[in-house]
Image 1 (tube, rainbow, N blue to C red):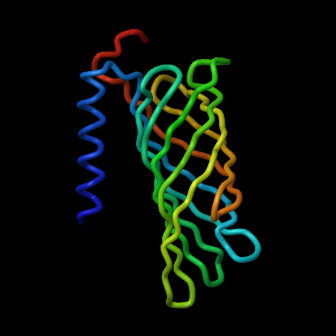
Image 2 (cartoon, rainbow, N blue to C red):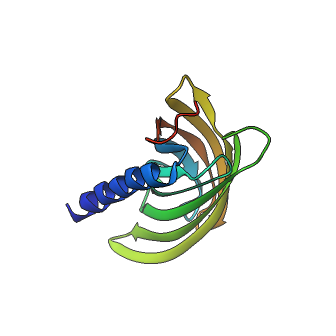
Length: 162
């Protein structure tokens, strides 16, 4: 329950910041991915991302990813993210830095590990308020990951430029 309160508080802060600083978009997405969160082979999982685009070149947010190797390891990652859109196309190609923590559950034991990584992808807008983002990522301790995010874009209150 406390986790849900933190998420709702973060969403409220995003909308308040959007009206004060004229942010571009709030983005809320759900992902599916394959990754290296396992001792051997591949793990599958998914998660969610909530964030906002500060302008046409940068965005910040948080994300959570759950994965399971279908054997003995379950992983939950929670990260803060800082995203940079390359000036090729507004909100298209991006590079994203991620840092946070990961809880590894294996054989009735759990362990906390700090994580960090870099992701790259491309945001494709579908209509006015939907998007998909194919991405790839690398870092520690997951080594690699690749997947697809889909979600909604919400224009901030002061953004009348579209």
